[in-house]
Length: 218
Image 1 (cartoon, one colour):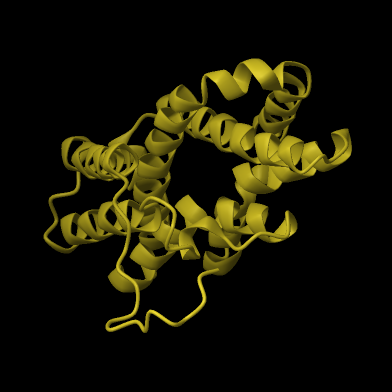
Image 2 (cartoon, one colour):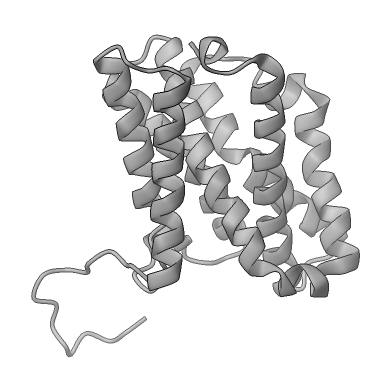
């Protein structure tokens, strides 16, 4: 199904762009944590490839694409070199990095859902793996950096919700047999726009209902 939506060269290029931007976010966190160059590279690789690796292992697409395509492995290393030498400059264009990160989020949730369905999973499970593809690397990044994962923190702008919406739209398109390049692009753009709006207006998920004011803030 993926080959019907995008040509292999286009899909591969989009994958590498998404991987590169996710790797930059991992490398920047490593710099803030004062990691050495090896730690920066590890966090870049994990952030960029973690979600896709998890998806491929679950659906049985082995060996995972990250181990069969050298470009998938090398791209995070290029991001590592960039951040290692130019991290002050990269920090200054963080807004731009966040925009590309949002685009990667939208792309990966749709591609992940579609690939999982191609391997025989049901629509709900496929959408869940689409979400995991988009946010899994970020969760692993935060765990390795000894932080509460960003998508679990109430004080962070919505991240998982846009990916859930994009994956759900993709699953619905599959269900009604209307998934094509146009509708998949709509799902990608929807997730992207929701993430951009969440960053712009600081949208956050609600906390527990009637949460007691005496509970200590974390």
